[in-house]
Image (spheres, rainbow, N blue to C red):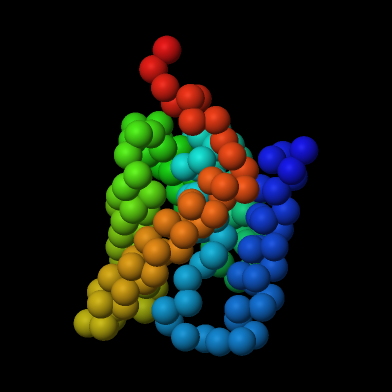
Length: 164
């Protein structure tokens, strides 16, 4: 029972954390978007289909409540959930799967967001790249810790990715 309720409950809690609590406490540039890290962890543990489902739900909630272009976070979160499930399937035996997948996915995310910021502001700030690298490190640590914690709480079947 807890395995079915826990991902949705965590999604709701991280949504509130991302949209209400964190912006009220700080505006520091290194603070990660916790919902994206959770969606990526859920994709790693539960597979591509559930990863994309939780990603679309989280992205839609963020798009509706925050002033981002409608659909941007929905697509990003859905792709992060799918990529997490894909990496989880391809590297199901490796203990480095969360590290590799989060480094690749969040590096791509940060690069695309930097390009978006350059096009929106029509200027380039040299510190943008260094800040992105620092945030990728924070995301990798967050995804790895979340993966280990959720692996204990949800206890997904390890044999679901095994060759048949």
